[in-house]
Image (cartoon, rainbow, N blue to C red; front, side):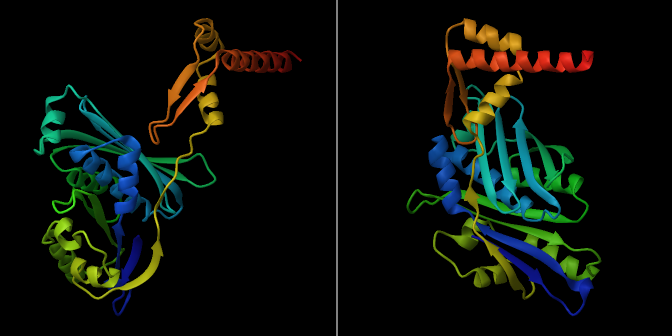
Length: 302
């Protein structure tokens, strides 16, 4: 559940916003889909939380695409619309010493590079941000990225954990957004409170919660809920999108693949679904490219 709150003061100079998110159901779905356990499942959960929370503050943009790279250790991708339809994946290098430490439950310092792409609805315009941080915490890496890539003061708190009671995965997070012209004394109270918050696994635990009661622990002022939304998993992969991707390889490459006599196997990173494009279809795609090129050349000559 995604709950949107706004603190209303006596005038516009005392207002700020925050969004609270309990993402347990979705991160468990992602965990099962990708077959992740332990720290890897928790890492993907933190990435999904970050993506949905960042998408919640978009205005004109339609979606946000986050890429997390840590050298040759791991790569994570998260894509979320501002309507909270999201998907994500995590790939780790089993030979990496840092990944082994991560799986053992330790907290190695990883060289995170965070890249965000925000797309505006109805246009091809993209807004890009990139940052680099060495840290053991994905939350720290995301906040460093927000500090360099967003104009307004914004911070996330994210936590994804396995309960020692039932061994199940849980996830909760919050994003704080300081609106323009916030009075200095209100801003100071807000961020001092945020810095002093305990881990979310302590605040949220494993039970169900009244959002208004939890919100009272997350901010130093009384707020009012203005919106709610249920995040959902959504992958846009399809046979058509796979064939479109293959056509970008070009005519000659498709012919070479077909001559090998084996179908092309393509796996979607986000949902682990496999697509097989048979040899005959590879030749058809190559012919479609050839026909389009000939048609284009004929038009130019005429």
